[in-house]
Length: 68
Image (cartoon, rainbow, N blue to C red):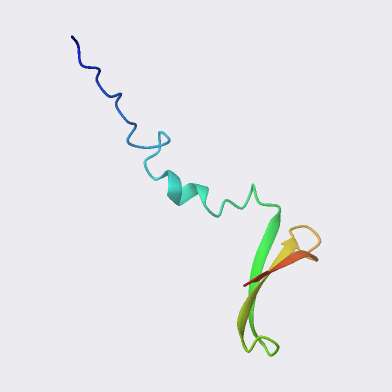
């Protein structure tokens, strides 16, 4: 009776071992510029962070997100 061997795992997900250093923050793929603003919310009594998504071409704010 033969024991089934486990398949060898890849050491890296891509050919480049530094793949995670190049994939995050890739400016060509993201259509927005992201800025953040920290402000005090008096209703909740705490600081909050607001992320502003700006269009790369027109520099106008397209959307925003408030971190809870």
